[in-house]
Length: 213
Length: 219
Image 1: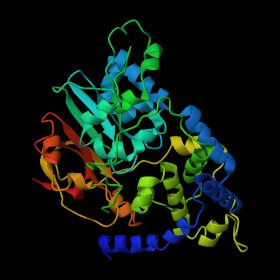
Image 2: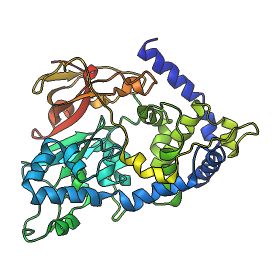
Image 3: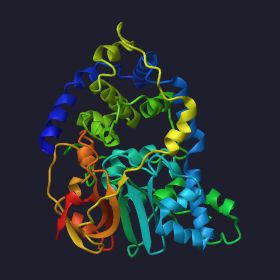
Image 4: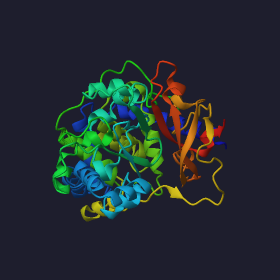
């Protein structure tokens, strides 16, 4: 059977299940409660493991990770060189790899070049360095327009770039995940690496904001 | 498949609304849904790409109106239903059927960190070298597969330049349909905004996509 026929049969089989989804509670809180109790009863989920997953993304994996990478690249030219030539390895030095961060590429913003990351097809995001994506990143307005009208989208974030700045949009269509290294703001020469990391925002590492001193 | 998920370049979906100091989860159920989908027992050898494919099979009206984690719930239900790990009746009742066996191999809480940290990657060694060289002009094929693909419609038929070679990677188009990893060379291809969107686009702007070898032809 060809790949085409196979996909066709596959979609027919999926459509077969569609009715059942519509019979489930429309309140997602009830729907998830029913699913969790069913899966727990069948031994397919341990609720304590769900707790641990939630806790991990609430407190252990988030944009503070990426901010450390950026601050290190700002203060350590050797690290920046390593980050640009092999981001996966350089981020691995800080033990920040893992799910949805196995193939990393770092993009450096400069006064002339502005990088912006999107996933038009779903919501791919570098989880180990940025944590879970914000709602706007997963939303239809951002996914539809970041590639077509990046300057308009940036304006909605309050960032108006001069005409001469070159915009580079990165659509995350494969398993490569992109981390933007924003420009280091002026007037931060005396700050420590740790103080610099505190300035770096999630939005600046997606490319929709600049870092402010 | 040419459905609503492939929304790059669409108009009419509104302005981007960012929320200051957004929490990881807005409501408790979102965390439960996200966690269940990640740590539940999956069918054996479940291909990760199928997760994305199943989300694409959500009815377009629901895709646009359901929140992200509601869509994840749909995917979780669908994965378990099609593997026969739960039945439609069980899902409707929220209770295991009378004859259901209980498994005892669910992921434990102390395994979560390792599970997230040590996840397998999609890079694969290939015996054959890459067909395209860095700097080469390539055209994204005009193809309309009704299954899963990672070639967005807005790039099909457009010409760009190969800027990076990422080695071999599992091909989602095959993997999502249980047809094995079928790895191919993966490239970053840079398109000018004008090539994609016409003369009104800023001549300085570029859009980069990661594309598998079979998505491309020499230009």
